[in-house]
Amino acid sequence: MLITTMRVRLVLSAALAAPALLVAGCSAGVPGTPAPQSGGTPVPPVPAPAPQGPTPESPADDCSVTVQGPGRISMTGSGRVSTRNGASSVSCGTGPLVGITTIGDDGVSFSAADGAATTVAEGATTPVGQYQISVLESGAGAARIRIVPQG
Image (cartoon, rainbow, N blue to C red; front, side, top):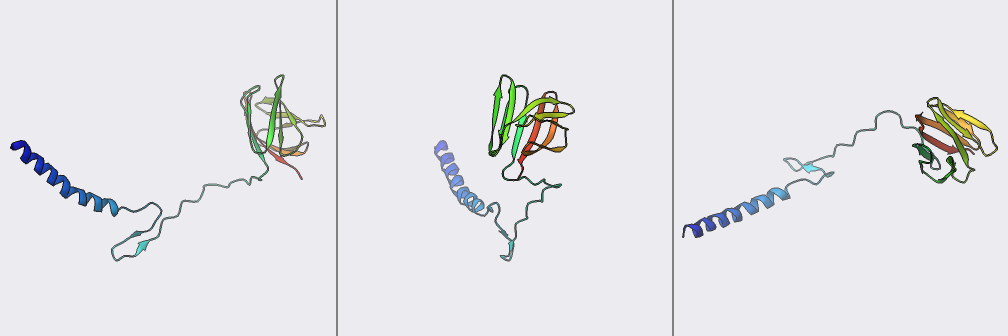
């Protein structure tokens, strides 16, 4: 008898609490939508903060290349990567391959399709063959490079 009374009280408590929880759940706002204040006036959503600092323009046809050591190279963008006998080459868009000859603390050396060798210092942008190449980081055999086809 005591167990039955406790069950009835527990069931009644749950039954009375459920509508309160349901109403409380329904009153919660949906993220990104205005919430009504007393008086029914909606509060406009707070806009997202603006990005900090300038953002460099990035043409739609540029490529980002990451080299993490000999033969360990990856690219985002429209282009291709080739590693043969430990020598890596990249192209961006429909342009020709450019060889990555050395990576050092002073920058990255490239060889253009015409055989011209160019070293691009870290933080610099230099024309190499049919591309503008920026070396964002270099050192210890690794580099981050941005390649933009010219013309």
